[in-house]
Amino acid sequence: MSLDLTNLLQEKVGQTLTRYLTDQLSESPSVASRAVSLALPALLGGLLKNTGDSNKMTDLFNLVTGPRIDSNLASTTTVDSSLLDLGRGLLSNVFGDSNWLSNLLANKTGMSSNSAGNLLAAGLPLLLGTLRKQVQDQNLTQPQFVSLLSDQKSFLAKLLDGDFLNGLGLGAIGATLGKAADSLGDAAEDVVKAAVPSNGMSWLWPIIAAIGTALVVSMCTGKNYNAPVPTPAPVPAASEPAAAASKPASASVDADAGSVKYENGVMSVYFGTGKTDFDTATAKTLAAELIQKAKDGAKLGISGYNDPRGDAALNAELSKNRAKAVEAFLLAEGIAEGNLELIKPAETDGNTGSLAEDRRVDVYELK
Image (cartoon, rainbow, N blue to C red; front, top):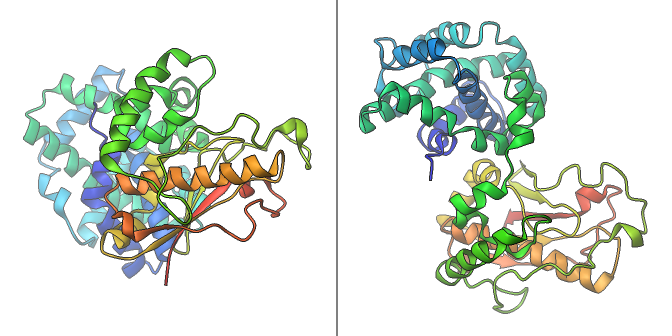
């Protein structure tokens, strides 16, 4: 399996950049976390968009291995003026005019454009320092380095939306790279997806199901709202059917399918109609703080919802399966089973006025 540089960057420099935003730029923790989770893959995307240009890749490899970049940057814990000055110069070299990226990052997160620009300036040297350490530790040649960058496209397609991908010149990867190809490469994260068939890909599911069964037995036991139960079961076929909708279906009904949001200490996972799969890579990145709290002993509540269309009994089961899918992901992240509690809401079918908002699971700290 290819090394996920976005995950590595989050582990190595994510906390440093988050603290910089909260402590020095006075951004809220939720905004800071969201901004870092987008800025790092966006900066990485700016590097790999030219992997097909040998001259530009030679320039990049020489930059990473040259005197301007120190591998010790990967372990930097503070952001100072010298780091920002270095980053601003590097941004100009890599992106030319990066104002569009600062403005887009600000619009996506609610932070100021100035904070977004400073985050990019601080993040790029740390990213390049991390890459240099990879080159040194693995003794990578230039072709191997380029191959490492090229392999990141599937990871970026999960973390960045079309606005970022198109702006970076990577719009094609969002259309051509499906999540099914990654499920075999990282079964620990995608084991829950094996419960949901994919049209036109039926030949894959015996393989995925076998992997999922073995992983589920070894990683987690799953539990009902009140007692232990088997791991997530296949979603009933007659769940949330558009044909029986009490609200009219629309083109935007699945606009948020599989996406993840983290605000005010709550992780909200959104699902497609009748689905229990979601973007686990983004969930891991955005909710890193909440996951760490649970690893340290905090207890988390998990509540699943469905939209009001279709059979009520099947939808109640669907909302439970969604909660169990998220629980399985959290167990796979190393959270003890005793620190997770599936809590059935008084009403699982939402009345928010948004079908996409109704189909969600909320994860929150229990006080």
